Length: 112
Image (cartoon, rainbow, N blue to C red; front, side, top):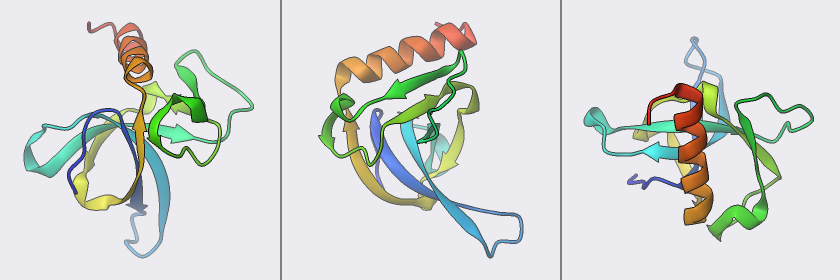
């Protein structure tokens, strides 16, 4: 499945036994990696505690589609994901919200 930066997708992640899995939402951060991979930033609906590298994601932050629940973006858990595990797309973040995520990412990793 093709994706673009700023899209919110649902991915199926398998455990080491390759029989059980969990589905988790992820924001596409960068999509032009080799081997059909992308850089994703995990999203969680457990927002009772926010760490310094976690930022709220509200339904109004979506340009299109629907955010199922008020959530948080967990920058420190950013990782490379195969596009083959994408189950569906929820939609895309507003450009301003994605720009803020990019700024948060750069501030946390000190890279921009």
